Length: 307
Figure 1 (cartoon, rainbow, N blue to C red):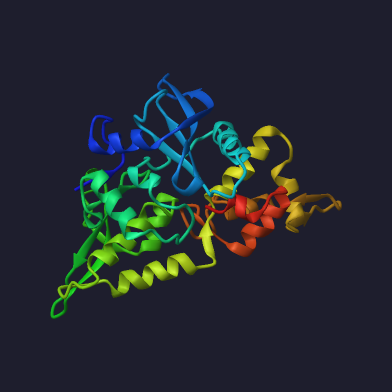
Figure 2 (tube, rainbow, N blue to C red):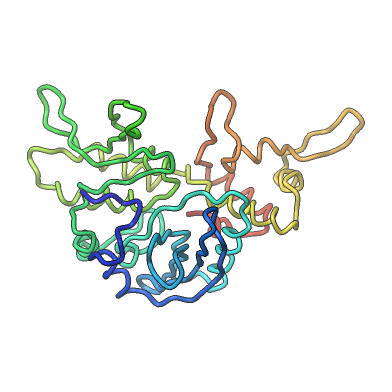
């Protein structure tokens, strides 16, 4: 079983595949909480795309994917991603860089040729159904067949809590996996590969998994991480206040003496900084209409803040 977090040492096949694929351009450096220097670089990706990566200098050790930029995006966007990341007071963990990132086109629901999916699995030394993803809380996610009495197995995502919690595994939807990772990849790619792998398997059904994939790629509810990072970048540069952003969105509250301010709690909930009422954790999701509204308030295109 291959665990996609953290990356394997650079001496293995995955590391060799990554090293063969990349040409890098330095974007910035910082010192992490342990006192180690790390660098942000832009690596060449498939089809003219760019990968913005946080890594140990001059290597691919502990490489983390910050963004996968489409081929039609300007080169300046890589520097913008770097600036947002470095400006954030609390950097959220990003998923590990994998060999598949140099084979798969970016974008939600992007199709991947069978040769690309196969090559990525070979680079990782495993098959897609056996891959394991780990979120920032330490929970792991695997594609496994779930068998009910009197029926064939259903291939589903299953969540395993950290060992210290001693909780039984739970079947979860693809949407829940994406939300926990705050990233569409590699969950979408692994799901597509698993559906293809079991397409003619009479003992395992992929009907539910296929339906979940279709809903995840067609839903108007999208991840809000890119939007949150864009807000944090503007706030860090001191260009605007969170109250002003809320006012630009039309979310205004008036004080008893006629004072006007922005509804900052609304904005914080929409970008995943505060939980909604009745919930203990912020949501990783936002409707595309709301994302577009906030993006316009920031003065950026909605495409720039969609993951």
